[in-house]
Length: 185
View 1 (cartoon, rainbow, N blue to C red):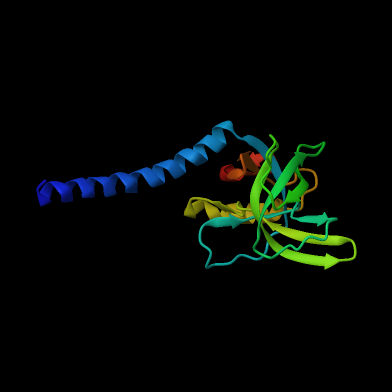
View 2 (view 1 turned 90 degrees about the horizontal axis):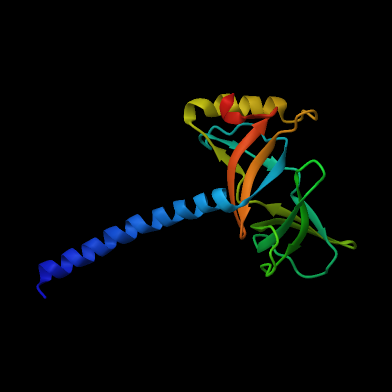
């Protein structure tokens, strides 16, 4: 085989790989949105605006702490599996947390431990979800952050994140404020 043909084949394989990887990532996220189960994560108050973070809304959630009765060693930054259920109002609640990936057909998210507090009752861990930023078009992000902050503590219409979950993967689809998508503000 001549060198030009070999170089052309290698080049075409590199181009195909570069196209395949992002296409596969997009396809996986679309599959979660299409076939995953929707959960509403009630948000908590936000930190002040950070001008260096760019065009997104920082999200903080009510359901980030969980008391584990076991005395196993939990480490900050460790990968964990958060088992979910919904409460009577339809919001996501932590059912359990494990270091082992579930084998049964339950709803779970792969997350990280952000903090561990060991005391006599057990281990209280803080959970870092993989969906704590909602990216928006730059021209709308500042107004959306203002609206989100204004209605964040409204107990009549709590703000929440609409997250789709499938096989441990999570995709943040929208943030809802006063019953409307944040994009509509």
